[in-house]
Image 1 (cartoon, rainbow, N blue to C red):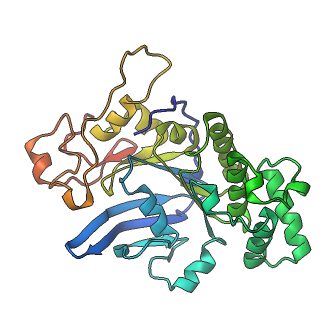
Image 2: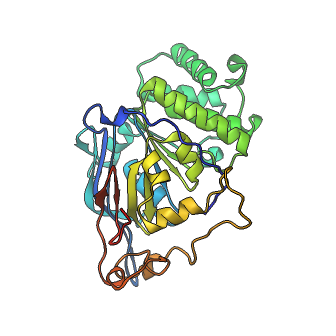
Image 3: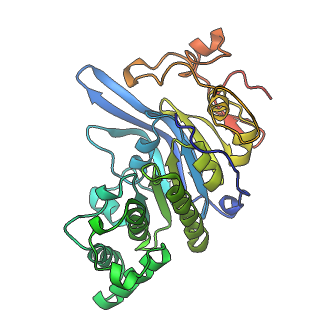
Length: 338
């Protein structure tokens, strides 16, 4: 678990409470059939994202963060399948849509930003050609209008000399600039939801800060909802309105970012927060969570965190806790310190 960032929390907005949620995920279960049985990768994942709200999703590698995002945008890799639950976008189900209908929603209504911009950009075409094709696919604009829109998007995302750079190829951009191009691609069709999966991980710290600031500004100016997937709680603290902490395919805790950071309820969240260095403390060693995330074929009975939990009791090894409300947050723990 990375602890590279020092936490500075933003002022949480009220965007998520203005009206009915834009995205609702209810009891999502994702399975991977194998010759030795069925592996459950996501189990009863439930959350929502308000209109104009940024929800951070954090956890160690293997927690199910990226799989949740892939399920929402309809890019779940076979043999993975949604076994049960519902994904509703603006009140309409996505999880049972035919592939062609989902393709029309993806890009137009829901966009994605991935960790490595090179996987999102075709090296054989200029960034302008890729932007123009995306714009023309989803919006009724002429080639000339789409090119002008592409230049405006590059300028909006901080690409210098966009009138010239629009005709450059991906390899002619630095890593940070390529990620800006990917963000421009994501915004091309004016989507209502962006699923950003580790958008800053491959970048150095100074460029990370620029990309975070860019995402915050664009979300605010376009009233776009954002699902920000990361392993870095510092990025979440700087960007999100609310945060969902995932562990072994389930949500361990969810709530307003300020509440979860400063008053974590679940022992796993408390461990994550303790592992982040603070500018106000002088410690010789960072705290750590002993052990590792369980494999999908070895998730323990009861609470999945029980082998690593410093407060484990007999009930934790026998019964799996559900999310329960504690103040403004929810935590899946039998013995929360209130």
